[in-house]
Amino acid sequence: MADDDIILSDLSDDELVLQMHDDLYDGLKEEIEEAVNILIERGWTPYDVLTKALVAGMTIVGADFRDGILFVPEVLLAANAMKGGMAILKPLLIETGAPRMGKMVIGTVKGDIHDIGKNLVAMMMEGAGFEVRDLGINNSVEKYLEALEAEKPDILGMSALLTTTMPYMKVVIDTMKEKGMRDDYIVLVGGAPLNEEFGRAIGADAYCRDAAVAVETAKQFVARKHNQAAAL
Amino acid sequence: MTDALSRMLAERDWILLDGATGTNLFNMGLGSGDPPEFWNIEKPDNIRALYRGAVEAGSDLFLTNSFGGNASRLKLHQAQGRVRELNEAAASLGREIADKAGRPVIVAGSVGPTGDIFEPMGTLTHASAVEMFHEQAEGLKAGGADVLWIETISAPEEYRAAAEAARLAGMPWCGTMSFDTAGRTMMGTTSAGMAELVEKLPNPPLAFGANCGVGASDLLRTVLGFVAAGSERPIIAKGNAGIPKYHDGHIHYDGTPELMGEYAVLARDAGVRLIGGCCGTMPEHLRAMREALESRPKGPRPSLETISDALGGFSSASDGTGDDSGPARRERRGGRRG
Image (cartoon, rainbow over all chains, first blue to last red; front, side, top):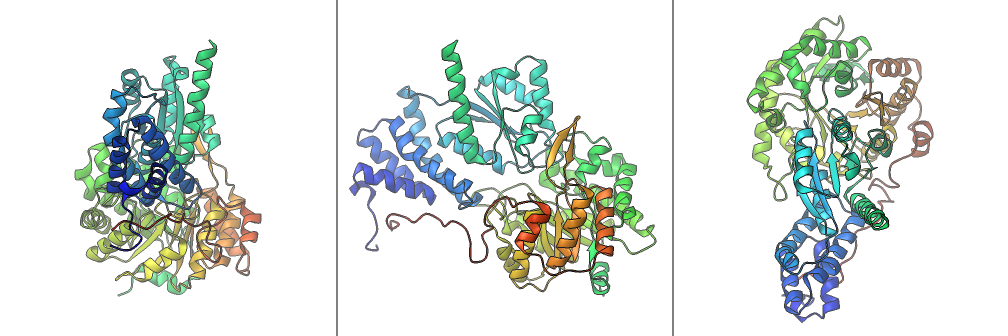
């Protein structure tokens, strides 16, 4: 072993959390799993491990992705490492009744197989503490509506990567309007060919340029929704 | 024996490619989410009209309606068993239109990405990607495509797999990547990185370049990156006609024919020999591009300032090449454990 090798269990809590941020950044799944277990053994609440170690670490990854420093392969690796930690935390979070950020149903629209961006959003949203139900690719309006009924999420996320599939988002939103359920949900859209103006024109709440922006936008809208609910 | 595209490149300074496929087919009534490739069999007259639109507007080469014609994409529509049929039909309709043009027009067999991610993060292997692309290539070849045209690729692994499929099919090929994320591909490949990748292939393409992405300005910045990398290989530029907007129930790109004419001239002056459009580029744009290329004398290579003045600003400050290669990765606090 080299001189600068680090033994995770020798680190203080503060150092270990910073080390976890580094390890998430570098996509080291085993190290993240080990560190999550160490913090739990030291008596940390699962919610603190989630927010201070994993969510804070993924926020750094998200910022560097937004700024064009990290790209999809690095973010996928980081998200994979985070998933390793989440698998340990998930049952503990439920057991301890930890507060929830909110829930999202997400899927790529009908005719579109491209799910790289959508997967990134799902992973980053989980990384930010949201519960995510991923419908996968090729979703018809019926599939979206069924999932909204069944899951009662705060947010509906739709993704399209093709010129030929992006108008389908409007089909879904128009159907939601017809059924009088559009305003029950925050609708976020994303995908390479889209832009803000397009998002507005089809009646979405926001267009999100990338996964990091999606997380920031989701947090803002959910906070606003909670404030509105409190004011009623 | 030389192929049709090599012959044309030997005779001509520049070649006008075609424009959009999806945008044109929507205007003919293609439903959102429906696979355009089915129309090769179900509505061949619409596909003929698509091809003819490009040829009559002055294109020297057009792409077949087969972008999503690989097994992975067609599986969405339970049509993974129709790869050969749909691609062969796409190319043979193209052959028919090209042969009636009364001048040399090249049929390029469009091959888009599989949509899958390579292992270890995804499920795609080199062997499975090669198999899918090869199956599609054989269909396009049987239908009479002159050249394979691989486009909108993000991952270097996928580009390599497509190159190998072209070799297995015994076809000349061209290949472009889409630089849509801070001047790089989604997977982080820079223009310089692609130029290097291309030269290392055992069967390099006849031409390489960029398509789709963000807008015409970004695309030309990518081209300047290819040129700076010192490549002698012919360069392809197929940029979008502005950005998509939603109008009265259909998508409309905001780039005018005049703007695309400007883009075509700048592309040529930057060193591009195969010039075309991507999403939103209609026959009227192609006409304006041809007109501009024929009427305006070749100028000096444009600077980034010239490009942004003429076509609008860039989507990011840096594209990861040159001296200003952008913000750096974060340093680790400590060493990696052994």
